[in-house]
Structures are given as structure tokens and as C-alpha cells.
Length: 258
Image (cartoon, rainbow, N blue to C red; front, side, top):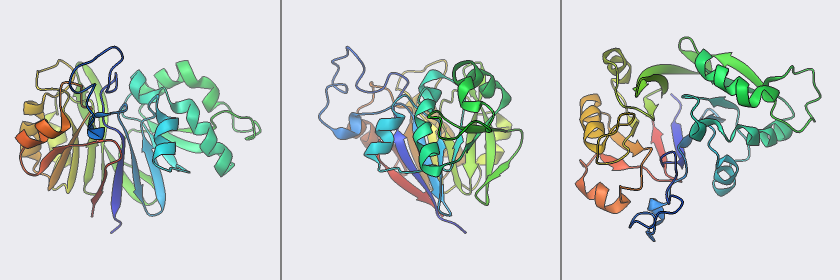
């Protein structure tokens, strides 16, 4: 069985941390764990690298983490903090000299078409044209990338249905306010769980820390990492309050599931 590695490219909320114009203790913290890009991860296995979401900081994230190639892109949903770096993948097309598959549900592709229609134009255009060259792959059921099954996990993000993903015994579930009962069945027996935890205070579209801990306790993964973290949460202080197998993620963290 392949070892699956997840690299946190960004672990912050939609405004990032520090936030523009904010001088709170976390936004002015000297702890590098408190500096958080918008949320995205790179999942690697079998020599393949799959980008989950494309944040506005994508170029910076790839340079910082020495990511020289991606082999596919998977989207959880189409909010701006998850898609607005998509144009930067044109550099990977240039290196690969070919197109890249993009996996998303129909609703997400509708939004991508409004902003990035040029990226999905016919591939008979010369690939040297310096734009993204992307191929739509619609998510309707479990799908396969590089000989590994990806299972979509329906989640609620306020009144919006979004997707998490299970890859082997690892699951990535960002932007969550509620996990439907049927989706808990898809999260059994995990080695690694990544789950939304925005702030201590409850929010209509995201888990609070207490809600995330409650859901993670029920799922009972060997280790849980919280993401989509707001500027209300100090990395060090929050970790001291969490159960021993649950921690805040941070940009640049690498975790593995076997």
C-alpha cells in the first residue's frame, strides 16, 4: 500500500493571517506557525502530486515548498480563496508540455467557467500558448488518480454543499459547518483527518474548535489536524487546550497516512 503524504500549503481562513489592517496578538505574532496562507494542500503518492484547491498565494506556496510539478488538480468548491490561483498552473503546463486534469463537481465547474473559461479551451491550441491548459473531469462518484481511489465526501458549508476527499486512510475536509450522517460512514478507520476549525466562537459556515473536536472525537482518526484557522487562534495557546491526538495545522507541515 502506498504511503500518502499531505503537505499543507496554506492553513488559514479566507482573509489569511495576518489580516490586512489587523494588529491583534496573532496577526502581530512572531511565531511562524501563526502566519497562514489561504487553505490548500498537496497530496503525494506513487510519484504523483495532486493539488487540492488553488489559492491566490499558489505561486508563492509552490516556490516556498519547492513544488516543481503537479499532476492533477482537485477542487473542494469554488469560493475565491480556493480557486483564484488557478492561472498560475500554466507554469506546470509549460514544464510538462501538456494538459493537466482538473477534477470538480458540476457546480464548481460552472463557477470556474465564468472566470477561467480560457483555461479549458480546446486542446488543439498550441500548448506553448502561455495560459493554463486544463481538462475537465467531473466528480460524480469515487474516481481514480494515479492508481489511487479518491472518495468524495459531501459536507455542508453553511447552506452550500462542498466536497471533502478520502484518499486511502487520509481525509481532507475543509470549509465545514456540518458533516451529514451518511458522510460519517465514509470517514471510518482513518489514519489522518484534516478538518475545519475556524475559531473558538461558533460561525454559520465553519466549525468552531469545540465543534471540530466533537466531530473529530466521533471520527476517531489516529491523528487530527485542524485547518482553515482564523486570526483568533494562537497556534501555541490553542494546541495546549486540544486533546493529545488533535493539533492545529500550519503552513509547511507534512503528515503521512499509511
